[in-house]
Image: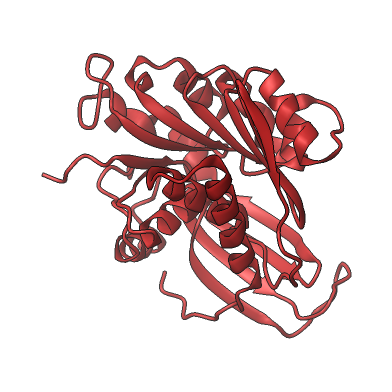
Length: 303
């Protein structure tokens, strides 16, 4: 039997198809560039990054019994992420994310996550039915929660007795999904990883930078909040502790998709290794910087 994991990422697991344009684009333009496909989705991106840190994460998500799904599972396992507890019986094909990036950052993207949405709370079954945990014997470990989950699923997770001993790391995935996370604001073991736009969506008002944003979300009830703001300063607010702030180095970004996931994974890995708040924030910023400055790599379609 596979050993129970100490870290589980819950949420999107799909194929990323990313197009990189070397020039700025206008709507309707057709240019030469680079296109690559890789395993993606917020939950899976974090899990893969954690595996690179030498940890042994697992993922709970929905993957169809189709060709792309089989290829995705094979590649995910190769990258060091356990896939033993995936939901495979949904009616939808394996999910897909398509994006175009330019020198200015993300130009446009479409996420087809209907498989995850259709699965709903079914992906949590191993945590509830005794496979990994139950309401009587809750699973213990770190749970990375992806805002791509449905609102009903997130609301259940906020009060689920089978998660009463879990430590949550929460990431909205996008500003339009941030409001789904409101039920989790008062979870005593939750750390929010958000950007400024997501913080503004949660707070329901404009916020002047990462410090104000982190403190605003903490004031709403969150025990701990980390806010990034692109090339500007990042901040962390925690209940009963002073807010800390650090500024990323000035670099030229080559691509941005997955930078926040690299930030979260490195911050979590650093704290599990005993790093202080300041050390963990610094390491997370350095990881995100390395991610956005790495040159996009083309790869063969393995789906």
